[in-house]
Amino acid sequence: MKLRILFVFVLCFVIGFSIIIQSRATNGQQLYVSSKTITDYQTTIESEIENIKQIEKLIEKTEKKLEEYRALSTDESNELKDRILQEHEMYKAISGNTDVQGEGVVVFIDDGTRELYEGEDPNVVLVHDMDILAVINELNRSGAEVISVNGQRLTNNSSISCSGYTIRINDQFFARPFVIRAIGDSKRMAAALVGPEGYGTVLNDYGIIFRLSIEDDITINKIAEYQTYQYMTKASKEE
Amino acid sequence: MLVAMVVGLVGGILLGFSLDISYPTEYSFYITMGLLAAIDSIVGAARSYLEGKYNNLIFITGFVTNAILAGLLAYLGDRLGVPLYYAAILVFGGRLFQNLAVIRRLLIDKILAKKDNSIAKK
Image: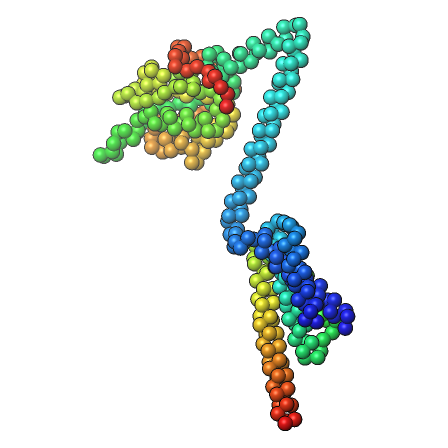
């Protein structure tokens, strides 16, 4: 008899307690979330975590560098200067102020030589600035580090535009054929361009001549003319 | 009996308000399952008490096994992506109404029997 009352008491206690806990946690809102939202959140969280990891790595790297500089600054030797000069060389290579070399691909693009169908637009077999831009875009996407078109080094403010039968690259005019050199992961770049869905295959299908060769040692010259910067100054406050 | 029920409910509600417990929302299904199992057991106990078939062991084991099965179903449903806890909700909910109907009938019978008795006495 006593046991029964105790059981009933405990159960009622549990009921009251969990009702309150549950209603406080849900706040009267619907709890049901579709599984798509959950997976969306999951992917977002995963990418955020990946991002955080990368940033942490960057911080670690930078701190190590700082540490090195600190250690070197106390030294009397020229090691610090050497290190800075080394870095200077690297930045020169990146900005296009030195000749660089490495493995990569050479892309040869020329106007098509096939006979046109009756009434076909000859523009179909001509190389346009858009084709060159698309190929460069594809190369950049697949890991190219340096690109040049007909010997013109492409830098951060290169431009490519159409000018009649020629193409204007960095304010210089170039006619067909076009040779694009790119240093980077050659296999990846080649696969991106000549794969079944690659832009090179598309061009070939149109009748435009597109050839790609993988080479072990490509040299890309530095930019022909120096850029002048008049408007840009370093931001005074870092945010 | 009734006193124990009311005191238990009020005590639980008061404790729930006084303690600021928060838990991950994933577990809310399990709490709901436990809640349903508890309500089901209480109503079932009330019915069997009125029928005169009440047994402590059946009561407490019924609650524990029902709660465990409901929790397992919710967990399995989570794993499989199929809302299996619906089964528990439907069964508990259905039985709740069924038991309530039986209790109602029993109570009405009792009241009617009392009236008959009083009429017969006169």
